[in-house]
Image (cartoon, rainbow, N blue to C red; front, side):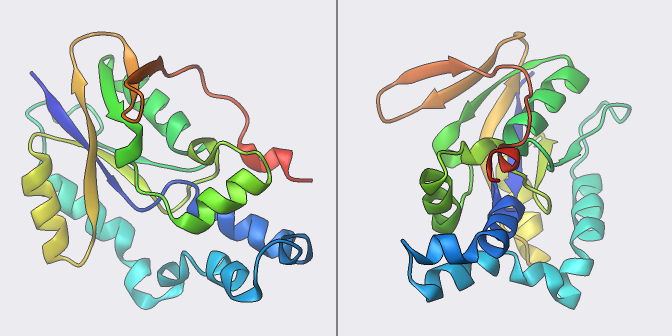
Length: 189
């Protein structure tokens, strides 16, 4: 009984904003001012009236696409430890394994660049404002979300194994998700 895993929002976005604000001058040594300003604003929509409704919209939309087992959570808020900690929590709560295509996880270029600059794993970087949902049909769920003005993408699927598999398409590499650890933000002093 396979279920899709979709993601709403971007990996590491809130962490990127915090680093860009905290390390503005240091980042100016490598990047142009417009790039850092863009990094500081990658969650700009979260300050709008629209974003204040995001959580409510996500919850209502996910409620429309419930799985048969209503006792198990379907929506997981991302936060400290980034998308990887959220995926770990999903596997633990659902008591199932999954397969995630790492390159399907939405991430902004600013997050990639700043993570490289500080040698951080962007998938373990604070990701407040992003959500993961477990749904019967990723395509149907994405269509429903699009109707309410939200973008989502399928990043993988739940399966009946216990393995938490991460696929890296470029070289066919398969890794297993390891236990949660401290948020990458802690490495930026």
